[in-house]
Amino acid sequence: MATSHEVEQSSSNLGIARQLQSTLDNAQLRIREARTHFDSEPIKVEDWPTSRGEGSGAGVKPPEAVSADVAAQMSFLRKLKFQYLEQNAKDKYVKTIVNDEAPMITADNNAELQMSNARKKELLKASKSRLAERYQDIRKLAPLVEHDYDKAKNLTSEAVSLTQSILDARLAITRLRQSYPQPRMTIPAAEEHLANQVTEMQTMEDELQEANERVASVKESVKEGAKEVERLRLERAAAEKEMKARRDEVEDERVIGLYDWYTASLKLHRSQLDMHSSHNVSENELHLTYLVDNPKSTKSKVTIVLLFLPNTRQLADVRIEGMDGIDMSNVVSAFVQANDVPGVVWAIMARARRTVP
Image 1 (spheres, one colour):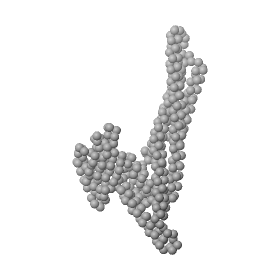
Image 2 (cartoon, one colour; image 1 turned 90 degrees about the vertical axis):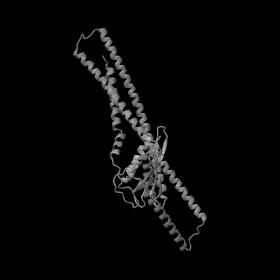
Image 3 (tube, helix red, strand yellow; image 1 turned 120 degrees about the horizontal axis):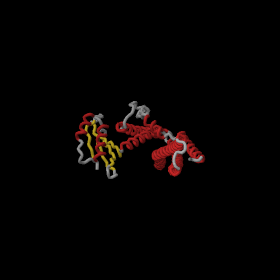
Image 4 (cartoon, one colour; image 1 turned 180 degrees about the vertical axis):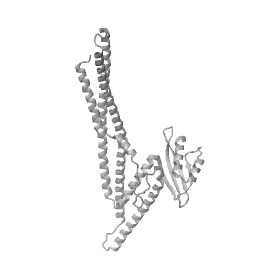
C-alpha cells in the first residue's frame, strides 16, 4: 500500500505539471495560430504602388503572373529617373547662368559631388543588406522556436498524463481492496504483487522525473530562442532607423519608395519561383532564367525565351534552353495558341524539375 508521503509527492508533481501546462498555454507564444492566421489572410494588392501612384485593383495575383507588371514598373522607373535627372540638371543650369553672383562650378566640384553620392549609395546599400540579413535570421529562428514550443507542450502533456495514470492506478488499488476484504490472497502472493507494483511505480516515477527534466531543458531552450528573437528585433529596429536616416538625405522620397517596392517584389518573386534572372532583350523579347534542383544536389539553369508580337502582349513563340533532349513542342504550341504566359512557364518548370539531370 502506498504511503501518505508518496501520495503527497505525486499530488505535488501533478500540481507542478498542471501549473507548467497553464503557464505555456497563457504565454504569448502563438506561433501556430499566427501561421494559420497568416495563411488564412489573402494577399491583397489593391494598395500596391504603380507607375501613377494608384492601386492595381486587380485582386490577388499569383507570383508567376507578375512578370509583365515587373517589366512595366522597370520601364516606368527608368523613365522617371531620367526625367528627374534631366529636369534637375536644367533647373540648376538655368539658375547658374542667370545669377551673376553664382559660384564657379569646376570639374573638381563635380567629382566631389559624385564621390559623395557614391558614398551615400554604398551606405544605403549596406543598410538594406543588413536589414535583409536580419529578416533572414528571423525566418530561420521562427521554425526552431515553434519546434521547441511544440516539444515543450508535448512533454508537459505527457507529464500530466503520467501523473494522472499513477493516481488512477492507486485509486484502482484502493477500490479493489475495499471490494475484496480479507483474506484476499496469501502473504507470498501479496508480497510479490506489491513488489511488482513498487517496480512499476518506480518506473513511472523515473519516467515522470525524466519528462520533467526534458520539460525544464526545452523551456530553457525556448527562453534562449525568445532572447535571440528579441535581439534580432532590436537589430532590425536599429537598421530600419538607420535606413530612415539615410532616406532623409535623398531629395525625392518617391524614388526610394518605388525602388524599395520593386526590390521587395522582385526578391519575393525570385525566391518563390527559384528565378535566377530576368532580362528584356528588346521590347518584344523576354529572357527568364530559373535554377532547377536535380538528384545530385546541384542546380541547373533553364532559360525560357518569350517572344511577343511587336507592340502587343500576344505571345508569338517560346524557346527553351537548358533542356536538351526533351521535346515540349506540343505543350508549348498549345499554350502559345491560348496566349497563356503563366501556364507555359509553369508547364516548362514542372517538366524541368522532374526530368533535368
